Amino acid sequence: MIIGVPSEIKNNENRVAVTPAGVSELKKHGHTIYVQSSAGVGSGFSDDEYIAAGATLLPTIEETYAIAEMIIKVKEPIESEYALIKKDQLVFTYFHFASHEPLTHAMIKSGAICLAYETVEKSDRSLPLLVPMSEVAGRMSVQEGAKFLEKPMGGRGILLGGVPGVKPANVLILGGGIVGTQAAKMAAGFGARVTIMDVSIPRLRQLDDIMPANVDTVYSNEYNIREAIKKADLIIGAVLIPGGKAPHLITRDMLKTIPRGAVLVDVAVDQGGCFETTRPTTHADPTYEIDGVIHYTVANMPGAVPYTSTLALTNATLPYAIQLANKGWKQASIDNHELKHGLNIIEGKVVYKGVSDAFGLPYTNVNEFLK
Ligand SMILES: NC(=O)c1ccc[n+]([C@@H]2O[C@H](COP(=O)([O-])OP(=O)(O)OC[C@H]3O[C@@H](n4cnc5c(N)ncnc54)[C@H](O)[C@@H]3O)[C@@H](O)[C@H]2O)c1
Image 1 (tube, rainbow, N blue to C red):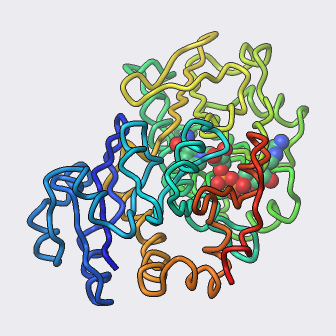
Image 2 (tube, rainbow, N blue to C red):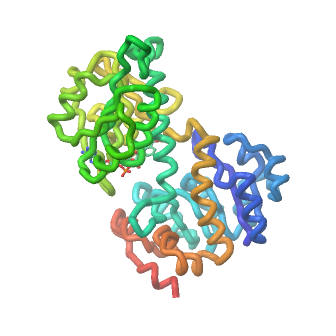
């Protein structure tokens, strides 16, 4: 198959969808890979590395889209890319259609096959192409929290791990899923005193089994949160209600009970945030302060570490990309139901219920196309 890897042109996006290692794997399976010049530079991969791995470089995004049967990307196409996407072209990337109506209409019009990373789903309902970014954000939340706890950064000037003779910081993590677990591991590794809260008892039980002794598990309810925030130095918001907005677990009035100079990192900002005072920020200006409490609320945290994020993402996407390239989207989706869940739009028809529901569009059962 002829595969195209365009540069990401969305603002501040430095990731790339296929690494030189990925090119070499796809080549081994007999595929031809065209990579747009400089596509990997933001993630630390030079054009020479792509050439050495067997890719052919193309100077423009137009040529990269024009030549390819399958486009592999990271972010959803932006407006200037809509017209480049062709009928019957397979586009494998994050789309997040349900929150983007113009993109949905543009892809219906294109006649392309849109297979979305975020809806590829395993039989246990987990989302294997979202997990790596949650892992990055979870680990990063502690790194960012530690940084903004430093006095010159506006924080209360406390070291997460303390030192011999001085108590460590208290870290409170709301939500014990992928983000929360990775955050807890990092904070515990720093030597902080960690409390992780969740509403799922099986989850708390599992965390209690695997976490080190400086991590406590506590059931998440308003009373317990009100008590815990009084002595928290760093609070990490990591809750998710699938398909819904995050609940406001820390309300505006609760802020005054949190120690001055404490840091709130709301990783759930992309779902509205789990603190009432959360509003999205960017890496250029990541924090703001309310009632003496620092808020860090960057909506695309993994974007700050494109090297790690690209490798984490491509480790997860490449096995699927190889199946799609080897068999074509139809046979690959018949053989692997995880990929079938990823199909959102096929040849002008919406085949993913969540997307048709979001905009009142006609829904076609995906099986119509998989005969
Ligand atoms: N800002 C970023 O750059 C970035 C990056 C990746 C993920 N995220 C976001 O981080 C959030 C968490 O993602 P995840 O992959 O860890 O989700 P997840 O589903 O693995 O975990 C969410 C956890 O929240 C728990 N929960 C639900 N209601 C709760 C409550 N009231 N109190 C405490 N816990 C509660 C659930 O039981 C679950 O264990 C999501 O909103 C995701 O979109 C943001």
